[in-house]
Length: 118
Image (cartoon, rainbow, N blue to C red):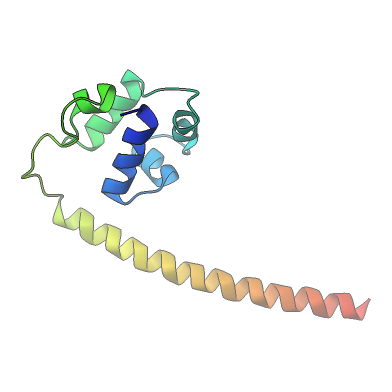
């Protein structure tokens, strides 16, 4: 399995987007993953270490080579508080998206009104 496929598998497993995953790992944005997806870079030892520190259930051998299983243990279960926090954040994001859409609609109406006044 290629590096980009392993990263894609991780993102799917955790239900994360590239930018969110990058921020968890201490990066400012998901550029590192875009470079991996495009084949410009592979999974570096530093990236593997960051993933291992944040997600200790991930098999480092699998991450770096593609050999073995992705998870070290089938019995791993994520922290309940973490799952609850993620679900709460998803709800908040949906609410913020709805508010943003309303504000964009209002702004569009204001722009239309201002154009008519000219």
